[in-house]
Figure 1: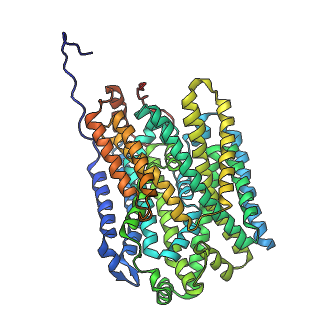
Figure 2: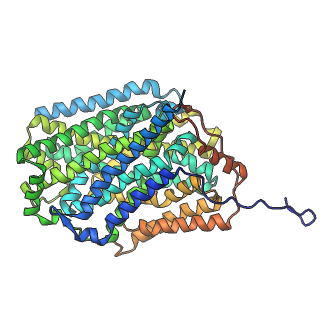
Length: 85
Length: 496
């Protein structure tokens, strides 16, 4: 407790974020960037095969994001197992 | 009609049977009832997650939405849900599984120990999920009405009685195993239907070309404002990492690694389901059944015109499976919000486990029956309807959960403020006339984040031991061997 007679240093508030593996961060940034690009107005105007690019990009996102995440988890698991004696 | 009825009765009987079997094991402890003893394997959990998310909305609703508003608008909404899962697997699954409790409210009330959090989080879950359940019931009702010839109200009542029965007696174990059966049935029927239509027409490209030639609007950019697409994407991407029935699945996994794998495997199945529906079944319907009055009846129209009684029976079972697998998980989440979060935490030691068990059964019945009565007068376009309801959970819970897990400066003041501001801004904007559909989340999420930042910078820092407990959730551990039920260090609580 701080009193006028016994001044004490208050611990500085904690700063920053808990560390995240760089590959996780990169993965998140990539899928969010892909989503943002796909949702921009240009993707509504351009078309391929009679469907607006918005549709194709969202479809690609639906397949790629879980597939890449899955690949990364399996790769990390294999690396961990390989590192064991 | 006899064959269809037999198929459906067999399916419903199997669901009740699983519930009764599970009830022998699931009432032994709270761990068994709420999170199936934390012993569910990766593939079973993946299929259960897929089935929980793939609701009546994902079979009936996705096709209705694509038929009415086109493929691009539909995928903007459903891609949000899919992207939410990798986000959850990176940001939420591992630390929350290590935290090792039952519900999302458990984490929030220990991270931000305040009565507003204790009351508001379960209340939002109950309200939002009741609306979600109503939408599912409409899907069950119209399916049985169109394909079995049973009156809508009768179908609704029968379906409600079956799933309320097995959830109330079987808990998470029953929900998990019925979800597995239901997930397999859904994937088989939707992909099988899509394959049969492709064979009939020649190729997927031809199917799409025919439809776009007849109805160019199917592939065209949506006519609604861009904020609606953005909002629908963000609603689901923000809701999935915190949505209670998905978070409970994280807790059922054997270990954090299994939880992350399950989430992503589930999404591959889910994507296959949605993409087959949108790119193959809906184009066929547009070409062969133009001008349907109720867009949500697309799948049913195709089944009725193209397939025989046995397949139609399977289709009814698949839609009921989609509805029931989501609704049972929602019911369990709502009952956990009332029995475990509100009453258990609110009254603490004064309520014994046996009383809580009884409360849980009563809650499942009450919520199921209330939703059933509301569904007698169903909403139009169920996907838009329940997405709006789910949005309030993403708007209010995402920032407190993510900041609480990852931001060292997150504190009690920030957490409470982010929760309240997210919910209030979402509901307020939602009610403002003229606001583009589903766009309220675009205002609510930034407002919630701002409240968290202001609270973090100007509020009192949290006690060091609470921060240390969160730090322990991020320490490197061998996740494959991590204890299956060992809880994380208890986060210190304080009275405010």
